[in-house]
Image (tube, rainbow, N blue to C red; front, side):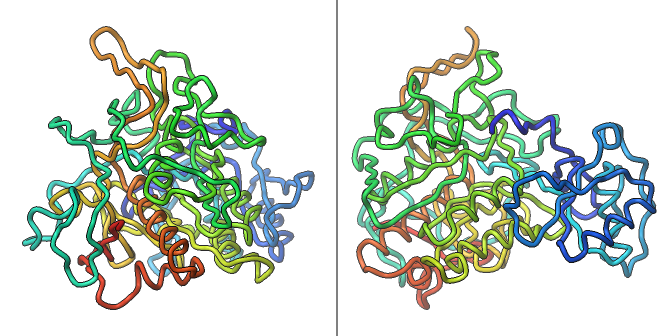
Length: 463
């Protein structure tokens, strides 16, 4: 799966309103009921997109149209600005995929591109200063034990942070084609933090699905993750897929997240599936497929990834709803937790802002992290700066001037690592109180009296 999609395959489209949309070129998704009409509209518009009929149907209710490679390989001409009353306003310098989406929507056909979801262990377009003046909680209780209780604030914090005295291990750029994108991961080596030790139990009735970069290959699997194994359908995660002797940008992302959950909520059954490439990109349709596969069978899902888009990701939304409804009542209802993004912006990201999803922003030791996305759509927040967790073992990255030797642990920053802290808090509530996953959200995130921050939601701590 990791070889199917890379940063180079993704395309940025300037929508004229905020960050660009990341799409997979050449792929359109259209409701089945409108597929025949869509085909005729595309023909009339001069497109050679063809409905894919040989694929195994895994997206009920949707048809997939694929453009010939030569049609989307070259840049499409700049699209004319549409009238103000049209929802698809100003799609400029796009690719043929987006041009066809606009054509279909103008004709009244609902269509969307196959979006690229980007891992949120990276930070891009950082703001100067967080727009929450006069934050009232200097010395925010993110470290240590026995902090004074605030109404609703759980005390007895288990620290995720490393006290190295070094500058924070800040992530780099989000967007695949950004000139600010780091050539290597910005995760830093860290020492074994000691207790609590990650623990996983395949016999546990509580199942957490982590869709990310998967589990490291055996030669680099840290001892703390020995209870996990690569899924049979996935390639294992490797630290240096392109053999340039540098740690790939998002390699180890999944191992890091699994370790957070395993430390803070020991005893869960964790299913770690690979959807993100070493570059930290995934196709919306692939993520949706696996979500549907596990609908009704899992309690909690961690999605530390997302995208901005004016084209509502209906395929992803339907898959998320399948998790939330327990596959339409055929199994147990689950909860999806997603990172809010690391661009310091108030713009909603998907899947974090989809209905019912627990969207999570990042906290620093003094309050909201400057890189964290924020807004009324963010429901919860948790530590996301200099988090320490499991990583590749026996791997050295870099040259003589910049060598980083990893031995099972790393420190990293991003809302990617705030989301699993919230997953762990929900899992602990399920374990201790015998409630369902939706009921755990009512108690940990939505209950009256909990400590909340404007534009960041409920502060989630682990007792």
